[in-house]
Image 1 (spheres, rainbow, N blue to C red):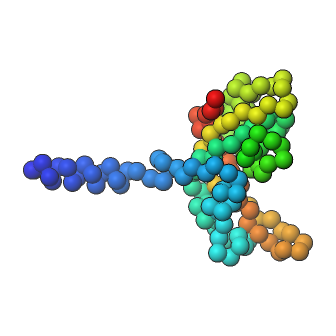
Image 2: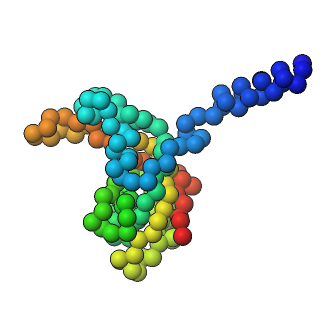
Image 3: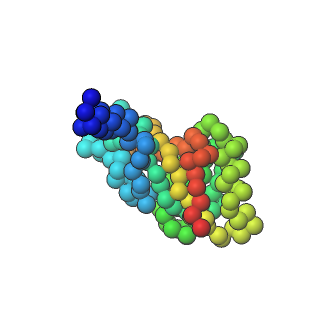
Length: 153
């Protein structure tokens, strides 16, 4: 086989083994996350969200007051203020390992301090019934691996 044939086979193999999850989309705000997930039908019930079940990377801030191991979630804020937009990030299944990692890397004594993190997780959707708006599919975010969380200092 000549060099060009071997090179073509190598390139074809590499491109076929790469997936969206190898290089997840990076979103830097909660608004970007919701826009990335929105659908043409305003997220109506039963409709898959755009990019549902795909992995994305979020960059934001966490605070010790909004880490809830008992309920298996923490909140990721857009900025270092509690008044900013936030996204609830569900933790499943390595709950203790993930929450231990979070608490080891943040200031647990200063309730006003935020820590910047990068977290990769999966977009999940859930149906919610609203009184005036009918049924909508809400985007959520789930992290399932402690190695998917890194701290930005």
